[in-house]
Length: 314
Length: 282
Image (cartoon, rainbow over the protein chains, first blue to last red):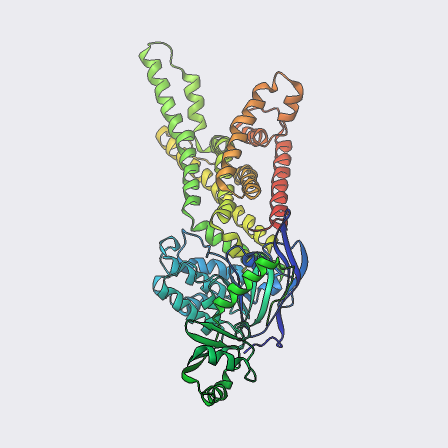
């Protein structure tokens, strides 16, 4: 469930980053509350990582403002409660996983004892004393998450954490993120993988060419749902369905009707069609996948040349 | 955490990284090996060759040269033997060490990992430079220890006095060696920060020290203005300070060389801090 009303952990207002004449991010305004698992969705090069870098103080915005846990981005006071994995995990190749985390623990000011705990959390204790350079990509990603967890952060920022992982590794990483997102911890998850956002996040935004084009709960982004009806004769069924109460639209595809109507109306629609002499062989609720919604949104934005901060949420 | 605690944490992290990095100890070993071989083994070999050639030719032995070289190998002359070597070897060693220290953060992408942890940019660079300081003292002190070892061996072979220099002279020697190494290391750190690369920093630094400074020194006696400018160059002042300990004359007074090296050190640190603080980490 969305927890947007909760204490805001990330607030941005018209956040913009330009490189010369090119806007990498333009006019992004977001509010992400405590306890949310928030998806940051967009194609590669959309400006997701640039936004995350601004939130972490790695790069300065050209204009606009942001606060993270009430502090300016990059402020040590705010970073004390933020864990982050930005892009690929970067560690010292000549050090073991354990020593890499000890280095981070010293920067962070957390006791060395915490290192063993986070290694266990990401299931890397067995290989902790091997050099980072010998790790597989999946192990490197897990070490990156371990580094982000050292501070037991209130806010976890993960940028494409399943990038390059095999299906098993992706599933494991998603399970881990789900576990980490339980309770009051806020997670900002950036991904271009729609299924990932759909499975993990409460709320999400869609960013394209640096602009926010939609923001809502994942459920709302996917739309209110519809009914798929297989009936004969189809043309007659379609004509009848258009006049039924609550039906917003009727389309015919693959020998079936798609009715834009609340799925709870299935029984009433079935009764109405059967009563009018239509043979109904199947009626079931369907919902757009986030992928379909995403493609629809990004095509619209491409076509319309969406302006800065243009909201497409439903 | 207070700003001081952040610097201390950063120092502890940097120390762990430096002391576990093989490249750091390889550089240290090269320095110590260079001091021993160039400062003692080669000189001893030279003495043997001089004596052999004077006996073989039937002429008078080159007693004065050999005696002078033998005296230079004794523990009492250890500082004069070692510090000039730090003036020549210390430049590239310090430059490479400094460039690797910050250049690696860029090439591995670890700068973003560190900065997203907590310390803040200035605390990060303060910790990094503070961790280099005792390491360079170890290098400088280690060079003198190797000098002591070489000179004790030479004294034992010659049956000569093993009296070492005074503690104060040793301290001055370690300090001078440290300053020479520190100025060059800070140069490497600043170059690697500016160019976000260890390789480019090392290349440019070596071009500066081996080509530019040598060329300037080559024409300095011809053109007065160039000679004046040469007196402010990093390598010239490092060499002048080292020469002072070696008992050679230099056109730059040791006090002046010390001051200029301190200014270079401060300047490189300031450039590094400014760039790290201001520039985006991409």
